[in-house]
Image 1: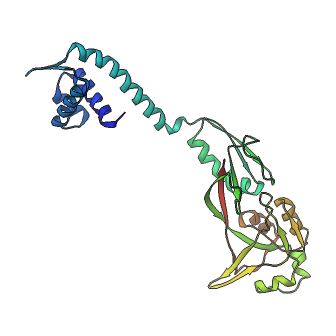
Image 2: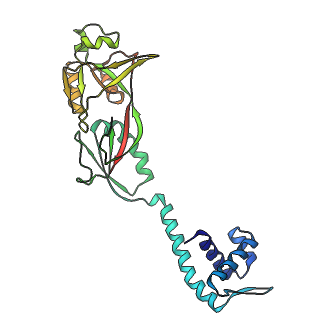
Image 3: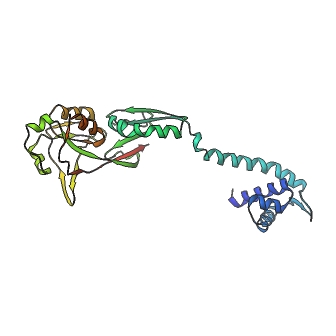
Length: 275
C-alpha cells in the first residue's frame, strides 16, 4: 500500500471523527489544502463521495460510514504494528552465546550488568569452550570470537580490539638471556598459541614509535587452549602473548612479568558472528 494512500485514509478518519477539515488539519499537523487534496484523490480513486460538505460541518455519506469502519481497523492495525516494532524494551527470549573463557571473563562479563539492565526480560545462555562449534547444528545464536574468522557461511561484525602483551614467569627470566629487543626472541623459549576455530597460529607485530617488528619466531611449544597456554608460562616454560586484561592479575601477584614493555603488540580483532 502506497504511503500517500495510507495517509489519505488517516486524514479521512480524523475528518469523520472531528467533523471538520480544519480540526483534522490541526490534529495531524498537515495543511488544510493538503488534506483536501488527499480526500479528493481518495474519492476519485474509489469512485464514490465519502463526505457531505457544508459551511458548518462535514459528515460522512453512507459509503463514507462503511469505508470509515473498515479503514479505522486497518489504521489501528498499522499503528499497533509500528508500536510493537518500536518497543525496544520489550525484547525478550533466550539467546545462546558461544565464546572462549578469556573473552567471556574479561570482555563479556564486565558488559553484562548494563546490558541486562537495559533488557531485563532477556535470558542468556553463555557457553565457553575452545572448539569451533557448528552454530546451526548446535542451535547457537551468536558467538564472540577473537582473531580471524574464516567460515564463509557466517556473518562477521567486528565489535572491538583486544590489547595484548608479552610476559613470562620470573623463574624463566632469571635463567634466560637478556631481552631488550624483539629480535632477541629468537634466543628464547617462545610458546605459541593456535586458534581452535581456524587452527591458525597467532602471529602479530610489535611496534615502538615508527619501528615495527613482525614476530615470526618458531615456538618450541604450541597450545590451543587459553588456560593451558597461560599455565605453561606460569610454570616457567617460556614467553607468551596474552590479553593485557588477562595478565593484570598475574602482574599484580608477581607470577608473571611483562617483557619488552616499551613495545606494543598489535591488537586482536574481536567479532560477533552468527549464521
